[in-house]
Image 1: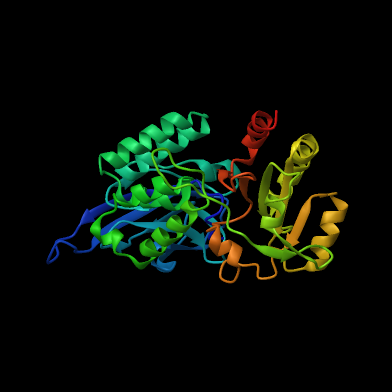
Image 2: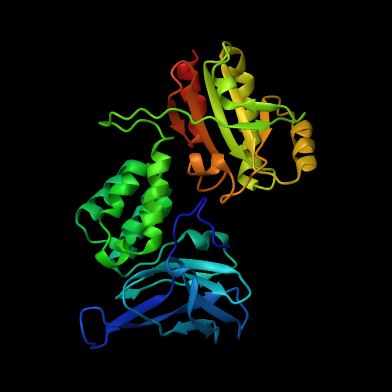
Length: 352
């Protein structure tokens, strides 16, 4: 599954790339990518798919004696996924010159969270991942800032902007570190547009004069009556509104319902309202879930749900769900986005 919603990028294999003589500066680089692999049957076909080139299959290989080996050639670094031919995603990594050291264990769920090493981008990514996993986000951010400042990691900058950076202004700055070859790719221009839109619905960035305010939307509730976000924000009883983009088919969304219920129970009487915007297609299933789980706040159904059709998805530049946006009603300013785990402490401070 090619998923950009909840990704910490992972690297695998043992890769060695040697530059073959070619005319000009952009001649192909011939690489060997190999590693041990557990949990995948002997003879199973594997594919390398290029995420930055419409997931084109670069090359195939087969599992032999618990190992695999590819010999791709590239003209520039790229982000590659390793899949079995029948669609099982194993890992992803930056394909670049050097030697990347790692192994794959498809039977171990935590194996997917282990970075490989051996090249500039991958070594930095591995250390960054380890720092995040240890809970030292400050050190992780400092490491990434240092790496990007040194302009060593064009591919890593793109991955960071695409997947790991939850502040759009910072992601846009990361894109400034791309090589000319990466910077001119069409999807980078699309990413810049998306990040620029998302900045409008993220908390104010320190040093910026831009104040982000909510973008209105209106969808039908369980009874088919249209309910606008502005009507909730401007209701005199409400001090803060938490917008919750979710769906019943989204496991992380469903897992967060318990926390939302706790927040609502603790803070509704003090001025918190929740405006949940479902991305469900099955209206009956949506209604049943709301009733069964006693989600007694404002619930609406996005009847144009989907990345390509939903106005709310476009306006809020959603990358995936769940996504949470906290609005201060008096000013309409967006003061928080995502980090639902931190909302309890934030609301306790705001609604004391």
